[in-house]
Structures are given as C-alpha cells and as structure tokens.
Image (cartoon, rainbow, N blue to C red; front, side, top):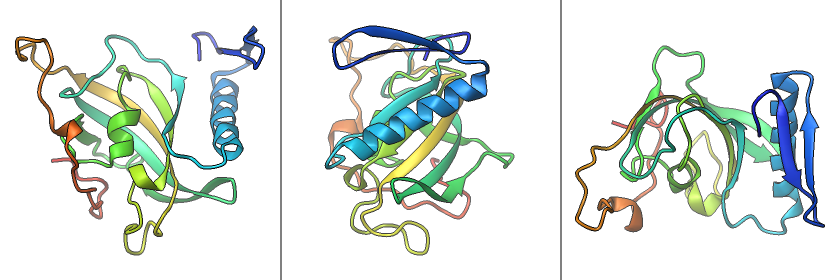
Length: 189
C-alpha cells in the first residue's frame, strides 16, 4: 500500500507493478481481497497474513509499546469473511494493549508489530495463533481462522530504558495463555 491510493506489488516473475485506484476505499477493498486470496491459495495457513491498508505515520511499534486500537473481528468461513464476532468500532472505548504482554491472542501480538499511528492493517490469523481448539464459547468455534481489521489510533512508545544490549525483556517469548474476550472486547487491562 502506498500513499495517494496506490498499491505496488511484485508478480511471480519479480516484476514490480503499481496500481492507482480512484478512491481510498477501492484501494483498501482491493488490498483486503488480495489478503483473502493469499489465504485461500495456501494449503494450510500456519502463519499470520498481514496486509497494510493504510500505512500511518511515525515510528513502527515494537514489543513493550502501548497502543489504543479500534478493531473488528470476523470468522473466516467459506473462503471469505463470515460473521462478526467482536468489534469496538462503534463503541466509545478503544482497546488498550501493550505489545508483548500476552494479554491478547498471539496472532495480534505478532501481526501488529511495525504498525504506526493512523495505520490500518488486515490480519488473517490461523487457529494456532488465535483461540485454538478451545475457541470461545458462543462466539468463536474451535479451530477457527480469524480475520481482523485493526486501526491504530494512539501509540505510546516504551521508555528507552531497556537492558544494556538494547533489547527489552518481555513475556513475548514465553507461552502465555490465550485471553478470553470479555463482553466488551479483548479486555487488555
């Protein structure tokens, strides 16, 4: 995704292509369909598919940074978007989360790395990085692939007081239990 309704990509011959769309909505819709097509063309989805829809500005987020996001989550069904199972888009409260704290599903932790303030990203998350075989009673069936559209509204970068090697210690590398969403979303705090 590029500014001014452009998208660029490489084809299987490694040739670079650019497409200009007549509107931001058309560019975003095309990018979503490309991501869904990638998902449908892989025999087994084992890792997250990320597709930037809007790039945002500033520094990309890393583990330890705090974000406030608006999101919608769908079940991936019949090779496309199924029903919405969670959203805070039309609510007054943004979801607050700290990347690397293990408070949200692993697919979010990984898929949001590098996002910038004002950025929007489409994530397709395989069951192993979402709610796995347990699912969420009444909302997410077991072994569900999930699709999220995430808007980063606010970013608070972690303080620059990390270890001497420049890396901050986080719980990201240790197995953390999947959070179970409360009725108002993925309660992060």
